[in-house]
Image (cartoon, rainbow, N blue to C red; front, top):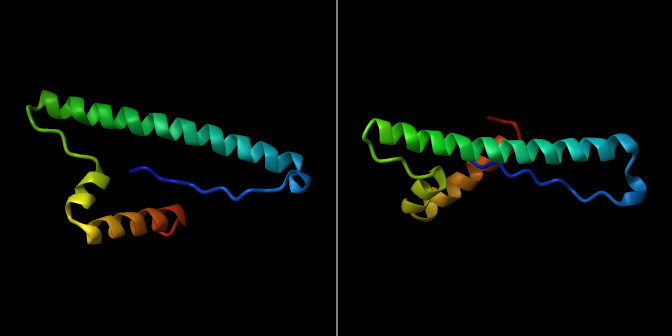
Length: 86
């Protein structure tokens, strides 16, 4: 599941050294997270292939097949996860 983190824009004059460093760390972790998600998806497909099963579609695709309610649930779920409430 792709987690989207929205980082608010901070004016340059308000950024301290530590804030700048933390923003760089967040960006690096975001890239690593994206790479790991892609690798996990590839491994799931490979595992399904080895078990002679059809790979499962991505979560977002499954919710889209359920119509508007599925898509809304998917985005609400992502928001809850982003807030750290789940």
